[in-house]
Image: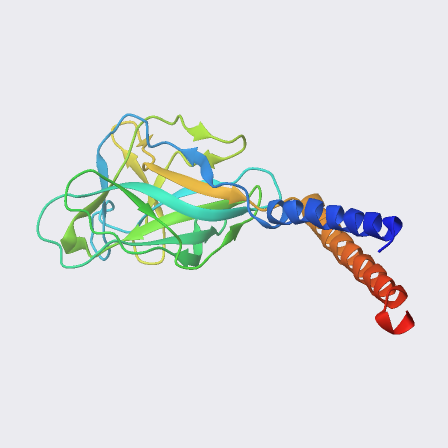
Length: 245
């Protein structure tokens, strides 16, 4: 094989190697992390989770969060401060993600595994049953429901502060789904003070379009490099074929 042919193959291998390193970087999602949380706030009391009861606090409980800017976010998990108020529950807490419908919980987008806390304060992490990408600058709702006889609770705080990425926000007001088909703000009398539930959202950013484009270009160059290498290798074999000696 000539020196030129050897050098060309080496260059082709360098192209393949360089973009082989880029492929996993371009194709993978960003590392998951906390995007918004109020879990570290001072614990207040709790809203009772349930349904079909005359007490406003005995109803499905929901709280809103809004995403920040970006190309989109893979929802990796949510963390809720849940608990059991009293009694011996016969069921679980059903938790789901809902779309925003004019500032109130709307249709179901994905649900999470059920939870069944056994004490008054349990930090529970749940992953979506169905993968979902959150749109940027969009409101969503976490909704928790259970049978009223089970007396499960979602702990709240009277502190509105939160941590996380810029643009991500947790709603200041919890909502109860009573009566059936409607939602009512859950407030602390006297003074009608809002009390948001305690939770955290973990998500990872969808790759930027420029990263996806780089991935496509890289794959094309990998293919071109392999094609040129194979083509030159074939020409060398033809030149040095024993049949031509």
